[in-house]
Length: 493
Image (cartoon, rainbow, N blue to C red; front, side, top):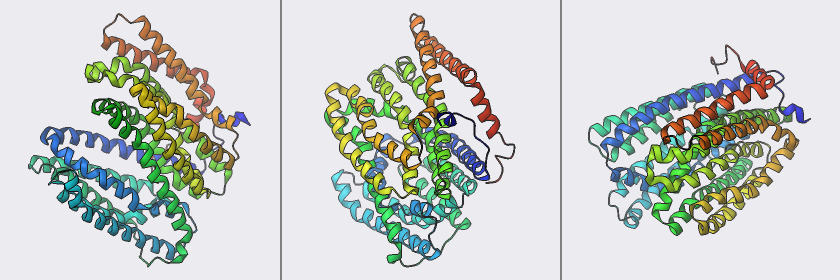
């Protein structure tokens, strides 16, 4: 049984090939548009003042939370519940727009009071403008979900890429015209409008007034909403506790550490979680395929994310002061801990979709409630040991709450834990060898200049990891490459 977890795939189905194409299109669009976004950010940041960014950031604190509530899990319900009738989809489409309108109204109502709370007269106009985005995006909530359910990820990737490119171009143009903070506001609205327009051009659906037939979909949406609110609470609790107890400077160092360790996770895991749910819904009654869509992405993510994160932890003592400056020395220790914790964090986002498509969204909701209760307390206790303790709270407390979710998913899929662990064994073993090699190099090159030592550490670790993967797991590694190699895989949907 355990051997099956590390064996090469038995053969790709049409759905498998579609999954790989979806990843390729989504990944290509994300990385391609990211280059334009980075370039735009650099140009705009050189023109705008910090106050411009600060004003929009204040607005986004409120807008981000309202957006979390207004989506209400409608899109996920359309994807997860495959037997929805056309009439029910029409009702969900109307519900999405009604929620968008409500979010717009709530934001407008709160704009002036929030301006008083933050003592910022420029905040209300920004909130008024951004509130329009709720209505714009609500029009495409269900159409986007339908495109995902139909596995049309090529079209979605093209839309996302065009949105990012247009947003970058508009932002640069408006900044050069001297529009200040309106640069960020207007470019965001234009991007949303373009995305909705292109989506509706591809996939429209009629509207119908919601009625009692939506009971199952609304129940799922409530579970997802509670899950997202709890996520919002515990994922921001460490920042709130750190800032309140340890102060602004400590919060700055912790935020930098978290941001740096999040980059590999967001770029690698985020790609898989954006595509996977639609495929899980398509095979929700086939345990063998569900197991496959857990093990294969887990294996791939581990092979990419583990070495990046552990390498970041090893290189941090040299990389942070050399690249960012000595003023960020306090970020090194939390960065190292958060990077190691990131190995777990990179895999757990794959689990919730399995609970959703197998009808266990209530368990997911209560598990999220446990996170929201346990993690803030853990962070507060951790502050007694400074930033080190706050970061360590993720390592100590997060697995305790995560284990029940792993148990439920593995039990639902009838997948032995040893088979799941065997899936990540190649990445874990090779990453361990990489870490030993990199640490040994740092030790023996202690008298080198920081730049040379950093370059050598990265080089030694990278070479050892690649050699370890290709030699120790050569048969499995090349079997996977051969199995997934398809000259037509980048064409079509």
